[in-house]
Length: 138
Image (cartoon, rainbow, N blue to C red):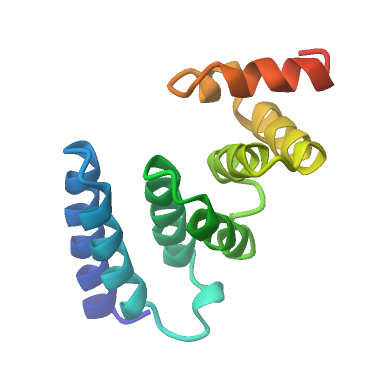
């Protein structure tokens, strides 16, 4: 990736992160989508795609836009480092649970738990860890 492009998308992501800190998730999605546009093709081959898509998926989850969150998080899993990213697994598991897909949710939440432990769940509603405890011995 060209240094100028990387610098541009990094600045856009920093702006997005600042908006997340202010809980302005709609505006943050816009900034992260602006950064996404700068990622060269094939987008799935760049590590930057992993963190940009994770940020977008997280914002959609926080906005309760689960229909938009799911495909973004699933795509992030296919980007470099995505499949082993416990946070992506957590958010996808939460989205699946909210959609009533309990078996798939349990699989993703267990992957998140294995990768990040109970601490990964600490800032979210305890219902996700409680649900996982009904499916596995933690």
